[in-house]
Length: 91
Image (cartoon, rainbow, N blue to C red; front, top):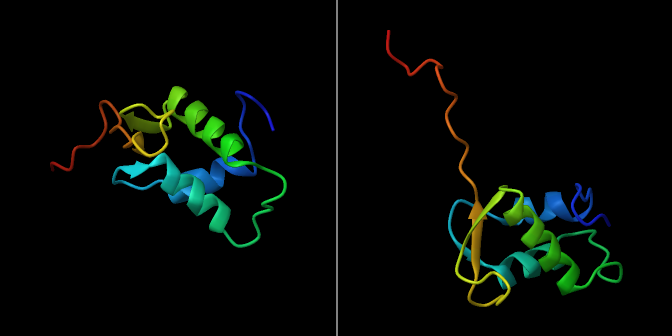
């Protein structure tokens, strides 16, 4: 696992479990552990949480509350910003 780079095992699972609505960090961690084929012996809940923190710090997830308090901190997917100067649907 890398500290700040892309983790090809955990990052896709975390992003798949994050949605457009706020979810507790515990819910994300649980969803990763429940994923079919996930090797529960290779990673701990803390490993998954560390990746969540990195995804928040890198701007891929939004956070509200203290994300290090897993039951209180909530995360969700960061909405994609519209392209500047692009087509706005007017003809």
